[in-house]
Length: 74
Image (cartoon, rainbow, N blue to C red; front, side, top):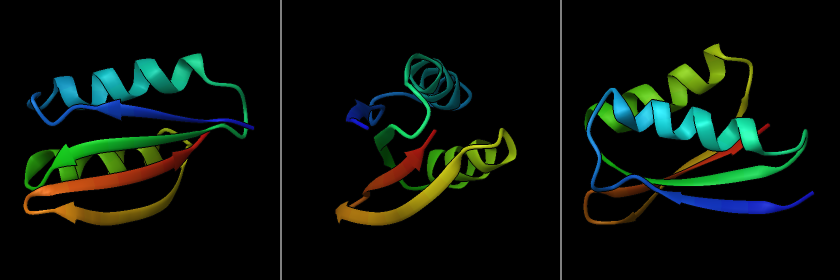
């Protein structure tokens, strides 16, 4: 099991989940992806859509200011 990081703080919806889904597709079952994103639409959509796609959202935490980290397990 490995942990990977993806920074999508400069991206906007819907590309935020597209990039997250592409990165998740590259991982092995059980691997962890830590996604850095901004509050607002990305913070609402990435965790919800990831769960709808069958991934496990382990944690959502504020890093600093408007930046959050969403931890997803494949």
